[in-house]
Image 1 (cartoon, rainbow, N blue to C red):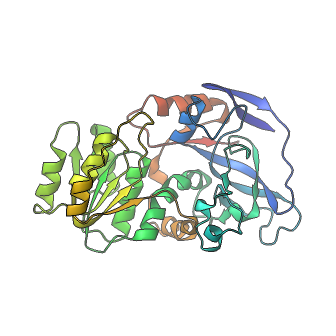
Image 2 (image 1 turned 180 degrees about the horizontal axis):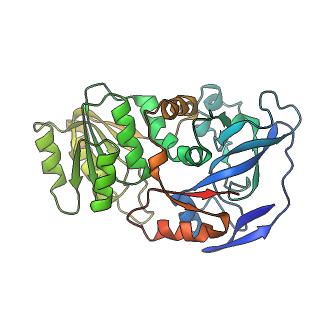
Image 3 (image 1 turned 120 degrees about the horizontal axis):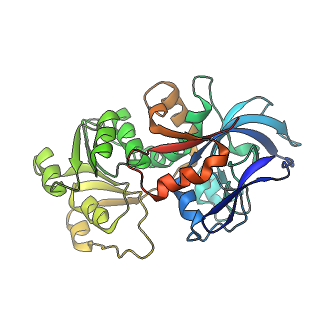
Length: 342
């Protein structure tokens, strides 16, 4: 089969590699589309400790079940699926409680030792399959993993109907949070982004108030929009030292702060303990949720979450390096790029 193999620092090569054979409990999926994640761009620089070349990356995958290993019970050849890339033991206390993403023995498709979706075929455990209806295209399915991670925090902690939500970040996660807050019935969604393109996207996907963080006093605007109280929910999908502090500053007394964006490894992050204590804030580190997939598929299928318009760029497998460069260069009009297979 053909695959885009990460062979060295900042280097991908299109190669013919053996088509994998599914083992017991596994299925072979013919990849139809694969989303390009910023994490993969980061991995390709060699700065990520959980993946080493040579390897086939790609953890946002949609396709059709092509072949079955032994003891596969539910999957059928031809099933339209997306891949929940978390591979867990299924036996520990976390797995038994439905928190498979916390499994201490777990791993993930697209990271060593599991090859990912930048190839014509990928082998995954049957437990990783999430069926999708015909109304969801493979291109849409391919990028749903990038929105499932933010939606996991909403499933865990919720957003109260009629509340005010402040979201920092205009990338895929920030846009996902805007749509999720809207679907939960938030009365006012305030987004803080940078640049005209991000402002336009934030408005398009449902933000009621959009603040240009490069030009405006963000905290003053949030307080103005919340009668001086701050937002009931403050979500940091940016992951910078300044956004971490702003998430605390802009949250109302007794409110909830969601930390989703991951700062750079050399960033010095403030921890304003006094403010956290005196404001009685609830802090949540959030990243994915194993039980989110089916509810999120239903949300997309019902039209309450717009995945289609989050796809701004499409590439062939051979052009994966071009998609990665878009992410590295912080291309202004990029939300999500998708590799579309023949």
